[in-house]
Length: 428
Image 1 (spheres, rainbow, N blue to C red):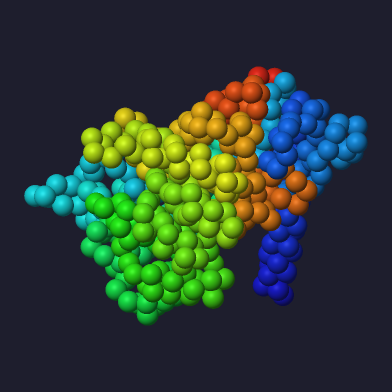
Image 2: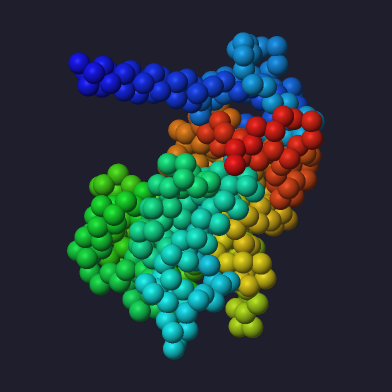
């Protein structure tokens, strides 16, 4: 009898505990925004209220027109600007080229990470640091374009489970290449059937999308694989219902990736007008990584000039340009920004012709469509995740404000709040 009573009590406690946890998860938070950019429009809205229930946005609209639920926690973000959480369309959490690692030729690290000089546990620690840096700088969603294995799946899952702070992640597991002219940590595909097989393998391993390294490393205009191989990979991925991101810097690799049906062309350096026209017509997204390219001080190839001209061709043609930086290294040790510094890309985008709000849309609503998540992130709209950031100034006039994010909320949880006067509900 005592055993039955104890069992019943335990079940009741679990049930009550589950109900209590459910109620906690559905707590209501209200954000008061003096200025708000919703991620899709071409202007800022004034004096707005956002009602958040649990991890989703329940209502958004002008103050006075939105009913504030009794007992809600209210956050007034002052005279600054509220925006959707930013989306980094191309980064590498595990590629940390700034760090030489703990191993050497004489004393190699245990379980080395492909393409690095240090062990998998150390690389994972650094990846967790990178994820937190991205989140705290306002990037609440990130797409990892392969880390050479399945550790990105573990990082994504650990973030989703609340074990570590970081952005929502879309991961590619092991990318694919078609020749020896490419990073070693990409899987070598030597036939259309091998390409199809690897799509299935990577999806089984936990990939959210497929990554193809279509351009050569030494000859950035040459394709790494045949048209038949790339088409087979893209076709199989689409048959399985996932998107394909193809790194294609220039030349034949660009045209072949367009003809293959890639959903996005990544880190494009040089693209001609006809290829831009084809991309625009097919609705293919394009990313650039302008800061990284500008910092490439090659003595033989004018990377910065080529990249700027290509960006402007795509912009003038109305091609869907998604925000991307290709962050993977550390301060001063690589050509591009470090994790947590990606927002410097916005300044170049506006310098090359975008309006500030066009640039911001590339990292919000356009960025969300690029990764296949337009239904859940990229805009401050009813039903979407409460991924919200705040800055002190007006980024529609000075886009560099996004380099100084002061408030970060992801899924209704506040991770950063440095705005004066607003209550500090930060989750550590």
